[in-house]
Every structure is written in structure tokens, then in C-alpha cells.
Image (cartoon, rainbow, N blue to C red):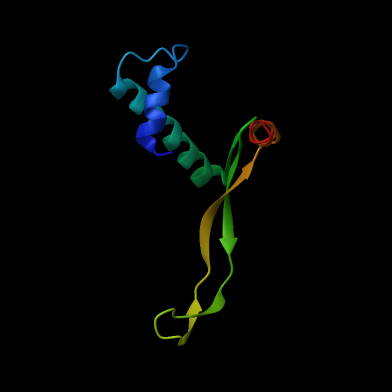
Length: 98
């Protein structure tokens, strides 16, 4: 599922109350922006029932250039991880068993 499909689902959801696709897209962008800001500032953004986005640091390591096979150093870097919430995991498992 991509962003356009998610926005379409928001638009079709009568409880959300969006009257235009542009309004639904602005709301979607605002939520994503808030998650990014939370992770950037606080190191994590937790949405109860959905999951937690958090900063994760990967250490430096040795690797290989896939084209040449030559050894190379891969520098340490920060990335974002996601840990799914119990409620979300349970919902996915229930739907997968039908």
C-alpha cells in the first residue's frame, strides 16, 4: 500500500470527516511530520495500539563492495526502527487466520 492508497482510505472513512482528497492528504502529512519530529527530538514516537518508532544506532562494520568484492569500511550511522504494538500484532494475526 502506498501513500495515495492510504489517503484514499482516509477519504472514504466517513468517521474521519474529510471532504476533500487534499484535506485528507494534509492530515496524513501532518501525522507523518509529527512522528518524524518526535523521533528527531525525543528519540522515539509511540502510538499506543500501533507501535513505536525509535532511533537506532548501527555500529561501524566491515563489508564488501557488491560489484567488485573489495573489502570496505561501513561507517556507523543512525536509522529508525519500528516495533509493532501488541494490539496491532494481534489484529494482523486474527485476520491472517481466516
